[in-house]
Length: 212
Image 1 (cartoon, helix red, strand yellow):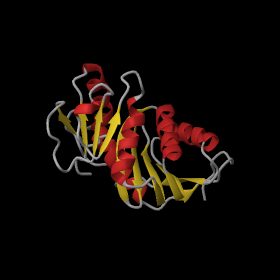
Image 2: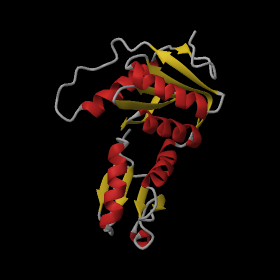
Image 3: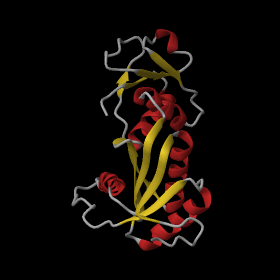
C-alpha cells in the first residue's frame, strides 16, 4: 500500500497514540507538521479538532485524544481503499504464542499485524468482520501450534456469525526463515498472508470444530 495517510498534529498525546496504532497495523503513513503543505499522494489527513482549520486535504479526519485510535484509522483505510465490501474477504492466521494476522480483500493485502494470545486474535477477527463486508467471508487458520489454535477456533466458532466460514490450512512451507532480532512479528504476518492464500479444510461450525 502506498503512503496515502498523513498524521498532522502538534499534540504529543494524539501523535503517540495515532503513530503507535498505525505502526502496529503496519499501515504506511507520513508525519507532517501543522501548516505544512501535504504531498499530492496523501488522500487522508488525520488531525485534531483544534488544528483542522490549518490542514488542506481532500479528506480530513479529526481525532479525539481520549478515543480509541483504531476507529479513526479504520475510517482512513476505508477512504483510501474506496470500498468496504469485497467479493472475497479472508483473514489468515498463523497461530502460536504470537498470532500473525493478515486481512485479504479480493486478493489484496489490506492489513497485517501480530498479537499475543488467542483472545486478542479473536478480538481482531471479530473487528474485521464487523467493519468490513464480503460476499464470502472466511477465516483460515494454520494447523500448527495446536494448543493455541484450538483455543482460538473455540472462541471464533462461538462468536462469529454463522455465515463466516472457518478453515484449517496446512502450514508446511509458510514460515519464513527470518532470524533477525525484532523480526518475529514480520515473520508471523508473512506466514499469515501465505495461509490466507491456501485452500483449507472447512471446519463444521458448532461441532466441536470437526473438519472435513
